[in-house]
Length: 149
Image: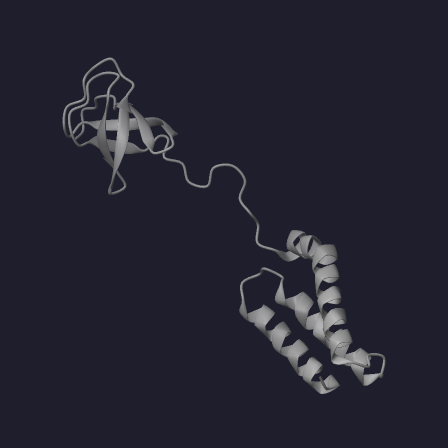
């Protein structure tokens, strides 16, 4: 390929990196294309297969060496711990659930399997607190009675 095609390809890949959310992939391919274009302009690369091998090698090496550092410095932060917890939320019993048994409860507009961890049966419509979540099962206990409805 001509040197100017590598340069155009390099800038196109760098623009593509800016248009995509921070994965830091295209930047290395763009930089590699620019390097190969410069080497071709200087007459160092003689054949197209050599250009493609250098492009691949530069892209792979720079990705392996610098991507983690870029992500650590400028990448999106990955939350640690629980992102969204259901513990402490209020669920409503859909069908009566006996003490220690599993039934159905509604939480955030979705029907869940729910285990009654309390000692009393939960009637339909009972408000309950989620104590813990295991997979797709909520462990619920009747909400303490209050004077307000």
